Length: 520
Image (tube, rainbow, N blue to C red; front, top):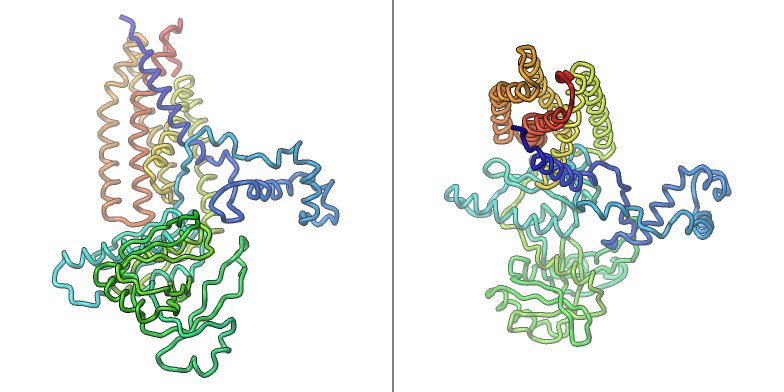
């Protein structure tokens, strides 16, 4: 009886198309457009910056508009070229047009590929810890506060987790202000409400007042432009050293809008903080209170009157973006414990990019050699195995994106090893298939018998490899865990492609063929 392969082929095609939809954006086939104006959106200024950089490698464009022949485009040169060529070159169009038809999320690169810092802190409690449960609760609370702080910095995909019993590991990839990050992570009382004594544009203008023991100088937040350069002259504040309240007392903070649609900041305190806030605002009516975060004054609003309910609003000429930044500050909270830095590892972005290029070059060479060997040794069957191998890698990438798994340099090694393991399964199957064909069986019977007899050997080897991955993930850390995750996903994908996909494709290929034997 002839087997109906159509449902299986439809299933394979569906899995392939889904894998393609999820994995393609992570394969580097689409242009990477950066948010150059740092407004949180990719729009026209970002398109123009992308095309301006791209045109440097366009010989005809540079010959026409690079007037001083220095290999660069000045603002004036680019403006002339833009106006003349914008219609023909599509400078106003999103260069990522095709990307919108695919899954928007890309694979997360680890520290060793993106560059960044790996920090380990020891958690030291200000009070005596009685048991392991209290320690665990303290560490969890500290991690929660750290996540809030890191979120304020807009660093993508931070990893903050418990390390050993009383340590916390913070892994941050990408480009950011390292000094600012460490300052914000390490300060116990990150957020403070402080009484303002005076404010001046120049710190020297305070004179002898700044020498008093109960006051300190704090600089206002210094805004930066899209190039990271200071865009304003910060105001200096003379504040009382003793904080009126800390972030621990903040219960809620949200952006709000008044009756005219203007953005304002709304927040409230916990019960104990409400009592203190009522007394403070009564005493300081008509004066200013500074909101200090990370050693900088974010704002210093006037107190219009006593606030006894605990709910407060800060009004002014604020845009929504600024209001959201203040809300983030208010939500950050204070650390419940002191963090002592015990380890720091810094990886440069250049080293990471070099690692990526070397890793993928090694993978491409290995992949190519396997492709050639399989085709030469196993002919048409080898070509089908190669198709399944491509499907296997695409499936691994898709699963990693979907599970938000992190790709590390050892993870690339895991991908390369996956290729070898997938081929190993096919070699076992094809050698068994040869033996069945030599015994005189028909093509269909030989394929069924070959896969059936190879199945137990493939399962045994892959299960033991999976157990090894579990052990590596359980007792390893960082890159070792990345290797274990990638390899385990690769093993499962290779079992699917080698045992199921190759078998169905072989049967489909020879179902309507007049061949007397399998090309193997």
